[in-house]
Image (cartoon, rainbow, N blue to C red; front, side):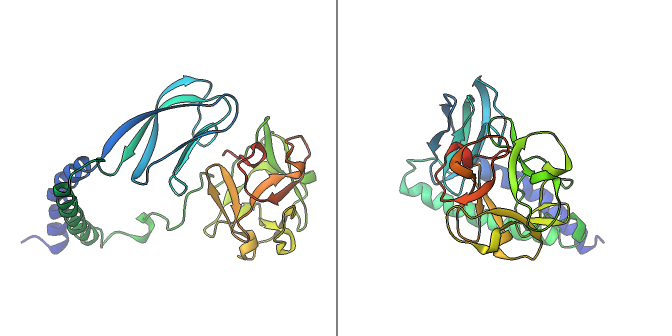
Length: 266
């Protein structure tokens, strides 16, 4: 007699083809051509878009999260730095369906929910180490990586001084320890044992961005939005002084405006 775990595993395997067919029935793809003429260009995504892939590069150098990307929160596909491409946009259902299709979609959702329940049972005995993290993946590796701005510049620890109060700047990318940042579970941006912080919790435009001892405060919590790095303290974006990307320029916070000095890649 097979044990319950074995039966659950077999039930999941039997339901897998059904899940795949439901997903296929509920997805539709379209192609979007979008080119950057050296600057930032965007395309409004429909509310039901679930994924975007670069199908064909038509001009420039297209690198995901550097010269092209998409943001499902703000429903935006964007290109920058001369990248042009044909993008495959995947939508969760086919537009223009009649009312009868809504019933089919509802049935499909119910089927997926039932299958998900079986999947949960099948996965019940998995080890904790196998579970996916419950925090967003911002694209930085565990050992840290560069956060790039335009003009070959990177976010940098000014003077290489790893101590509280040190300001951040943009500087020529050089792969040194001063340019290796990583993101923690709370959205904090770390370099060595310090965190990127809004100086004194200042909510105003022009607030300095410095290093400080990690505390889990909102002034050290960040998120990404369409290539921008946004402070969870006040919703302002990581920027450089005077909005001018030049070597040695200090970083600061400013109202988000999608300007070139607020674009970051990693």
